[in-house]
Image 1 (cartoon, one colour):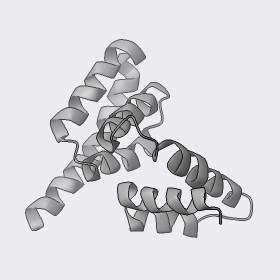
Image 2 (tube, helix red, strand yellow):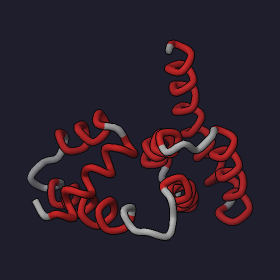
Image 3 (cartoon, rainbow, N blue to C red):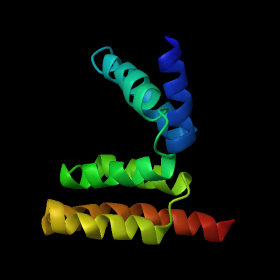
Length: 129
């Protein structure tokens, strides 16, 4: 594993959680493993580790992109990542609402539905202590 891939996996674990990354890597097949390696090295190790934007900002940008691309399943993981990075529920909501203007209301409706599931689970975890 390259240094970039190691750095990337470490950042991915910090943002998305060990459980999320363990699941993604554990579910990888011979066919999908190269994609996981690419994601760790280039997305997490190459982009998320750059100077210039903090992780909170990167999370909100990622939510915007996933909303525009209509990727609600991928968005769920990144809503949790945004919360892990210190984004507030209000910031997440405002980001998704802002996307309604530029990415379309239907895309934002799907994003809100996906995000609500994650926010509900996160709030329950917070209440349980």
